[in-house]
Image 1 (spheres, one colour):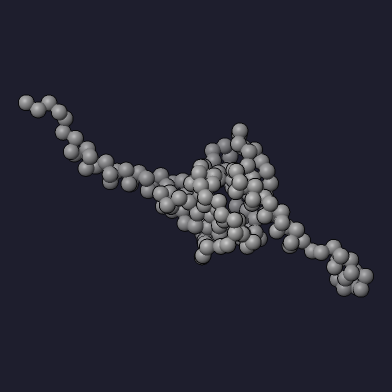
Image 2 (image 1 turned 30 degrees about the vertical axis):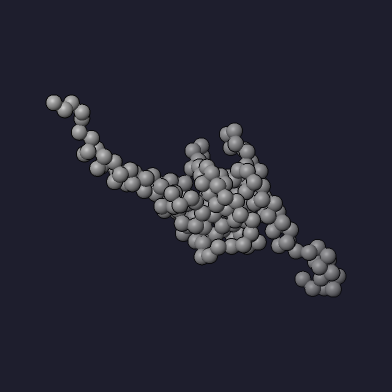
Length: 166
């Protein structure tokens, strides 16, 4: 007499159930975290040149419960802006993003709970992107350099005032 339980029915359901659960979880993280809203505003049309960071970490923070992308983010910091994409296993409802520097309101170092990082605030978006590690440091450095490049040259302003040009 065979007393072993019949597991063949359980195994047949495991893979489809796992796939459905994975897709549902990735989709919920995209909607709850705000990645989907970012994807509508900032779709990536092509890759950009710049400093690349693989397996970076970022949190989309609003309130006390962030959606964390720990060691699953690919970040490129370029002259035109930031390119973000997630590891292929998490890519469901997470298309690649390109955020131009002009859409970024401010970048500054911040702490959230016990985590230090670089907070990126976007115009018209109610959550902050909190990057940790080398990617965050490079984003802060590039944003500050971009702000210096885009600020008007004071010597040119003074020259224009002397000559009567507004």
